[in-house]
Amino acid sequence: MQSKKVVAVLTCVLLVASLLVGCGGTQEKEPLPTIRFLSDDSEAAKKYAQGLQEIIRTNLGIELVLENVDFKTRLQKMRDHDFDLVFAGWGADYNDPMSFLDLWVTDGPYNDVGWSNARFDELIAQAKKSTDQRERMDLMAEAEKILLDEAPIIPVYWRQRNLAEHPWVKGIVRTAFVPSNEWKWAYTEGRPGGDNVLNLNLGEEPPDLQSVTCTDTVSFDVLNAVLEGLVRMNPDGAYEEGSGAAESWTISEDGLVYTFTIKDGLKWSNGEPLTAHDFEYAWKTAVDPRTASQYNYMLFFIKGAEDVANVELPDPEADPDAYKEALETLQEAMDNMGVEAIDDLHLVVTLEAPSTFFLSLCAFTTYYPLNEKAHKEWGEQYATELDKMLYCGPFVIDEWRHGSKMVLKKNPNYWDAESVKLTEIHFDMIKDINTPITMYEANELDVIGVPGDFIPKFQAERPDEFKQLPEAVCFYLECNLEHPLLKDPKVRKALSLAIDRQEYCDNVLRNYSVPAYAYNPPSMQGAEPGEIFVEKYLKDYLPIKGDPEEAQKLFKEAVEALGYEAPTPPGK
Image 1 (cartoon, rainbow, N blue to C red):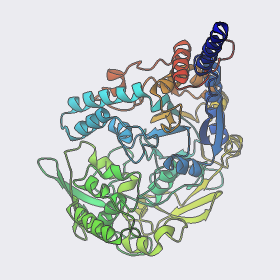
Image 2 (tube, one colour):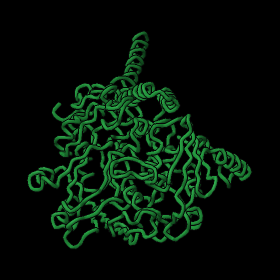
Image 3 (cartoon, helix red, strand yellow):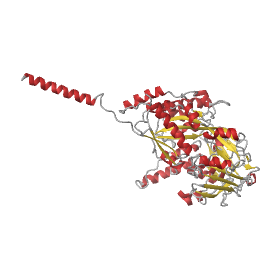
Image 4 (cartoon, rainbow, N blue to C red):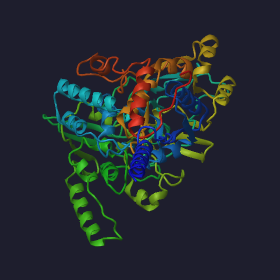
């Protein structure tokens, strides 16, 4: 009897032990979740994404699943948060680090990743209000360090612009900031087949030609030709009185109130007068929450603009009374916004705080005028076809074959038409790498971007035509924080350390782009003339050669803590 009890006890002990083992350290871990890697579908974009895929596979042992889509679809997927990892880029809209950092505040219109950090938000808010340039830079530097440490985005490289331009092309004004091409002053001299027609390649169908919602550089290149703000960059890079729709302006002693006098006699392409009211309507439309413009924050320098954008509108069908009340609140906020056309020729703008770069902002796409009557008449169809859009710039769209070609012609109603020498601009929309090269060599394209693999050829064979220009552009990975792996900052840090940025620039891009050791590129100025923000505050903050061993260690710790099986990098 005693022996049976002993056997029973031993059996129970063994059973419990086996259960403990089954629930303990020897339990099989789950395989890693798939990470979809979203990028564009052009030949160059595919190559660049594959290069990062290979580096991460080699250094971390994980396989990113590539998803290549057209440019417009990629932008929409980012807005819909329909990605795990995406290769994205940003070009500065003005020469201040805020142009990059402001994107990542909590619930910001470009914060596709879902990242939130209260201290980061606080620093950005303080920097916006400060009138002390050194204090602003100190605040923004601290904010960027938080961004880099938590790594919701992973900077990879600062882009270098490589162009080939035939010798007969003259007068194109280029800047490091967007819009980066100024076509008004361009002309040709001795062009085969006749002068003053410019053949270019956009590389894509422009995704959005509504100035109040446009966000991409492809569309900017078109809009800067067919529309015009209060000012326009002159050939020397300055924003002078009389350069755009504004004849002149005055600024109050405290730097808060700008009074613009609009040129008398300005016309839209349909012959209607262009007035100060077109600017007021455009700016208020851009910040109207019903517009859902991702670039609405560009107007937050104006008093009350952010209050307009922040009005919450409930579902009109679910709660019509609350919606009606919200519309009244919205109208009140719009009435209090610091932009008012006091008559057809005078626009008064009141800022939240003095700004050293507000006039340059007035040349930016979101600040362009908009004809209220036409915009409301065509509604959602506005700017989707050449005959559903009004123009006020040096050119008008004369032909638009979607996905193939766009032709601009000189605008006879433009106030400064006599200064515009080009009669036509032809934009092709070719995505592959080789065709534009062939067309350039056959004199069928006048200017092209030169892919990295072709740079040695152009340097050797066409050294006088090859141009290299710095850009205020950073390319980076965005990590969707809803992903079960990428929500962990240690995983994101491991991804950042796994990337040998120097190798990527040298062997994949091969276009003289610069490995990014921080987010803000070297084109962004600091507090004093000649000071470079990133060099003063963030020099070598990220290791450009990466640190694969530390990356593997961090990644293993993170994924195992999350309950997943850590992969073994090749060769380990």
